[in-house]
Length: 436
Image (cartoon, rainbow, N blue to C red; front, top):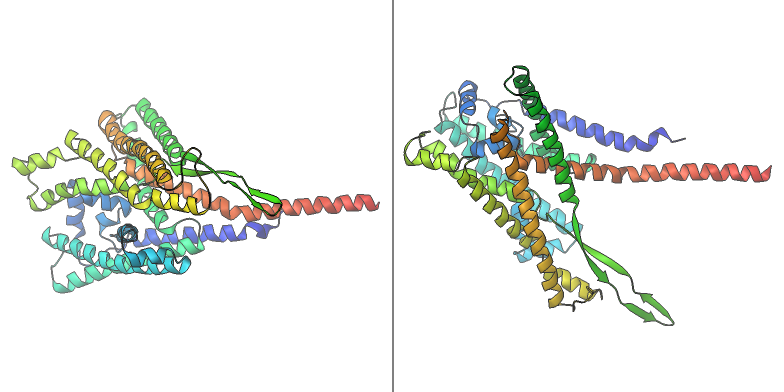
């Protein structure tokens, strides 16, 4: 018989996550004071693409409503990426990484400070954009200060909430907030899709085909994210006294997609940024040179697809080279006495690992390009009424896989106690039988 209190901790963690989700969704509907929401809704109904649409997707629609959580956690994500890049080149940060938990806490503190700076910059840019587009009731200095302070405070509260979800909940809180923002828009989009089917604007077989395609794409993403290339490693035997130790075999697992979801996000921002600037400062003109440039780099056009693919491949190799150092791994193997069969320790091992990682990164970049571009062909071929982005799918699947993995980790002690309880009860019954 399992004690009901066995899963109490897991239940409390899940309840805390639900409570945090309610706070996040509530804050996503509290508007920034002084914004003309009628003009704002008209603007987003006309211009939903570009980098503005990307921010709106990650904030769960809060950016289109200009709420206190309009900036979302993107400033923190940007700060984390910048700190990761700096930690590979700045000596002070490199030393902090080697100090263990204390060093990681110090780097996390620096990341929060940098997130505040980025939030101030993005909050100022957003407020300036609102004033330039005449989307405010009255453009006064008080509105400017109030708007920037509200946006920055909302972002920092979300960062704090995400850290609390990580500590008192299950999974990475910041990642869960991003996923919640993306998923929050799916019910209305699915409702719109079903409405078009009922009205005869889309065939039922098309809806079934789209559903099967999405399921298959999710299965493919899960397979590729789990896929690994294992490099065999042998540990030589050592004689200590009259006994032989060691001689074990192990493996070095290398993921196919080492860069994660960073390349599609960076590629989207870089490709969409020029089009957004043309929309803002080009008078929204669809004619002339600006109009031709805007059309050429709009989603679905050949030039956009080509540049987007090249950007993903570039950032895959760039980010992997920053986060993965074959020379450091080869030195660690050499110090521990391990070696790759048929490869000499040191530089030869580093070159071998680098060659393997290069081939894996090429496969991973092609996989990211495929997942990122296929939904756009889906939109054009079947006229899907809402945007089903490959970047969104990647984020959702990767974060949920991590969530399920950590949930299973939290359940292991409870399962172990349950099995131990059953074993002890059987032992007691056996002892009683022997006594009889």
